[in-house]
Length: 297
Ligand code: NDP
Image (tube, rainbow, N blue to C red; front, top):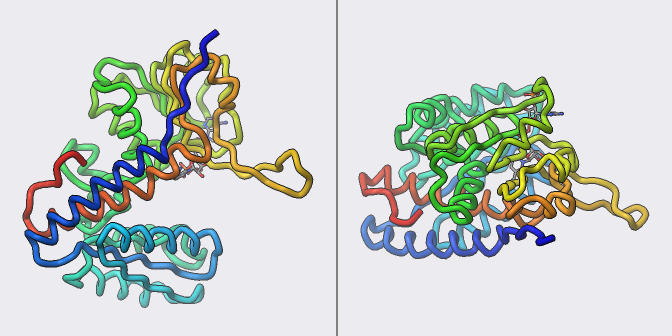
């Protein structure tokens, strides 16, 4: 039995970053300024703080400007909305990312809706969502776009392939399905009410799992030769007492006996998410300067 291939998301993300870095240098020549990404962090959530730090670090590494706005957990809705408005009008800022989730007392959707869609590097505003649905150019959520890049790198043209996306969130499942549809796949979206998920998955050439349930997708659900993108990030107890480890939504070891290729967790989709955020910032900067979209990204 030949085992499937493990897709090296880290290596592919490094290539994307390299292209973004080269694109930034060209942008600076043309526009006479650096692209800028503003990240808003509300509260002290340690995981969010780590994400924000790594995003800021990579922004600077790739030659862009990073603006960090840390605000206390008890910030009021009006004050946060004012900050977003300020960033909408700030000429140095091409991309605005409000780190989610926000503390419970804040209306998250209202904050996201206030972001100028042309600066919406997370692709979560209704305008960005609508542009994606209409097949118009625009900013697309980073994780699904990164997943699509990995798929195209593995498979080339996706036309005519059957794809199952498990999960229908605004952040991952729905935009992923739209992107696959845009690539001429025949797309099924599965969710918690789907009946006989195993059979639904077994029909697919491409499986994207974005559920948040550790190793829920079993190996024998996978159609022989399918390509599997495991978006899930789940922390579970490790063999060593008191320790934890990260696993995806797919039982990777089992799935490798059936799949042609699969992304690991960690080291698959995760690194792509941040690389695409950098790509989106560069893309937004081009948009704002009226320049054609950067090539090869
Ligand atoms: P959500 O919780 O918003 O959505 C989960 C989806 O899974 C829902 O649509 C839900 O269905 C569906 N679901 C839940 N249980 C089942 C089930 N038993 N069978 C089938 N479908 C089910 O999660 P997200 O989309 O935000 O994230 C999904 C996963 O991806 C998480 O593990 C998250 O940590 C990870 N993630 C990883 C990123 C990365 O960079 N790699 C970035 C973003 C997320 P229903 O709608 O019916 O409730």
